[in-house]
Image (cartoon, rainbow over all chains, first blue to last red):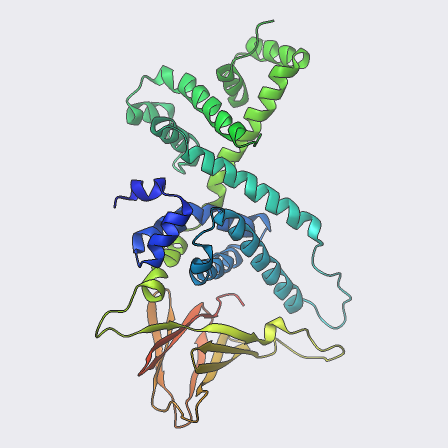
Length: 189
Length: 203
């Protein structure tokens, strides 16, 4: 099966393939959710090393719990909860390591900001999933404009997409309209 | 009233409009609630899209996640070593610090992993002076037998860094190894037990 095919599969299908021993399905699952998982420790303002630790721990938990998630259509919610808990755990550990007997430290941050992180992570994930639902050409344009870390110029985008440079702006506007429509259909604004 | 197109709004957000055009758009937005709402929505959407790249994990980390599948989920075939994942059942880091107890430096960390009827007890002592750790442990069975002369490996970044063998009572030791993220594996006749992230690089 090609990687594009995996991209179009829903979570239950991908997890089912993972459980049958398909390594490409697992790769597709990790690629699908890599930014969601990594975004949460980043939002907690963790160091790069701590973000990596959280990412690794969550990948391990995901693989351990695949059997329980096979009928779950909302793996993203499970990942947000699991990653947030892991971040709280790491933060508590750091707090313990840095505190001394001579200090009377306040406990780690109360839940308010954690809830905000959960909401922001979910909203961001909704946008990612909406991008995946765009027609291929629109998805490709949005990915080049916003997700490509090389920051390609309009000229390069036009060349890759085989369209006049002057069409990039209007096409982008149409694609953003479509993206907005996908989110609205899901009740997300 | 002529509303502003999404294209013009996106150009306005990007600063691709003339000063005159900018003033006209701002004037319209101050009067038209529909366009102001569209502007706010598109702006938030663009911000969400733009900031997504800041959440891209390093490629080697993603590769690490992808490579987990091999030892953990692939069904074992005849002749191949069976792989078992050990789960952490006890960690002193999860226990509260005793009130009133004074200490110097980080206390040793004690972990207990379990895979089937095999327990692996690990104690990690951190040496702040030279940024190294000593990792000692014992492979135990719930039955009376000891796992003597058993290979134990310490792996980091996909490479086996250190090897040792257990003694008569199943004990092993890795003395003063550099701090890093390590996976520990024990080769038993029943299969290979892997303890993922037995130590993390910065802890």
